[in-house]
Image (cartoon, rainbow over all chains, first blue to last red; front, side, top):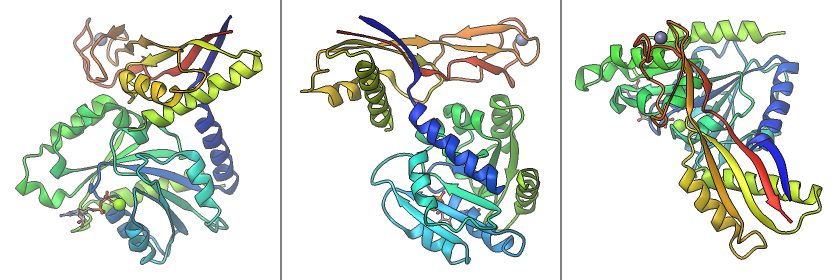
Amino acid sequence: MKVSVVRNVLEANERLAQELKEVFAQRGILALNLMSSPGAGKTSLLERTLADLRDEFKMAVIEGDLQTDNDARRVAATGAQAVQINTEGGCHLNASMILEALKQIDMEGLDILFIENVGNLVCPAEFDVGEDYKVTLLSVTEGDDKPEKYPLMFNLSAASVLNKTDLLPYVDFSMESAMKHMRALNKDIEIFPTSCRTREGLDAWYGWLRGKRAEKKK
Amino acid sequence: MHEMSIAQSILDIVAQEMEKNGLKRLIRVKVKHGALTNTVPEALETCFMALTAKTPMEDAIFEIEAIPAKYKCFSCGTEFTTEEHGRLLIPCPSCGEDFGHTVLAGKELYIESIEAE
Ligand SMILES: Nc1nc2c(ncn2[C@@H]2O[C@H](COP(=O)(O)OP(=O)(O)O)[C@@H](O)[C@H]2O)c(=O)[nH]1
Ligand SMILES: [Mg+2]
Ligand SMILES: [Zn+2]
């Protein structure tokens, strides 16, 4: 017997992601899914953001990592709530992990929830974790051909942070070419060149966060 | 790789559909796979085989049908497909534009049908 199924393979994850979206919508929380290769600067960007906007927003972080809880400790040092998820080798976070982690977060009055995904430019793109927006980081030490090599990630992201601009003099990285490729993949993408070290460009990123926060607020 | 968790999701759905239809032995599962998804079809099949080994689904055929990427040109609106795998920066065949196309197809990943008895 042949049975017509026509069911999305990832439907179970998408159902849970939908539940998460409802929770975030009810409470007016802006949820962001941060993705990049390992070492591009996700945790560094969070450390800066959490410290600099501390008086403006109540923020929390869910940290996805293969094994350690170093990142959660780093961001907790800013005073923000941080929950670590160890994926035990899993290459991406999924919605059920986030639902679980949320139990440990006090969502009362929360403005922004950052989800730092596992360092990987491939797998996390496929799994919705209930976020309002995906944000992809790319550091200038990785090469300007990354957007073309990992198109789905950039196509799905509302914003991209081009980090470590302080290292531009030392690497062979064309900002122009990286930005052109990102825009070709996604004409609406917002691009923020930043240096978490020198703080260059962070204000534009904060401006974007404020705007998105205001849109989401009830 | 995340193919293992995707293969597991496929198995879960297949098991549900079989139970719903009172079927016991899986003969074939047919999956539609978009060229722009970040999954490797061969890896999916390998994972499916690994998960079903020594189970009643062991002999099932895992069939993947590719859905090519389809775009609508940002400049002239021409719709076109390409066999080029996993790329988004494709020049439009009628005007050459490679910027900002809309993806019409290629991100799908779904189970189309199963055959079982
Ligand atoms: N020079 C420079 N180094 C940075 C910058 N941002 C992060 N790093 C360094 O890059 C390394 C990885 O950063 P981390 O935030 O842990 O990356 P993650 O794996 O994406 O979370 C750390 O040693 C950071 O100090 C930057 O803007 N400039
Ligand atoms: Mg980190
Ligand atoms: Zn065209």
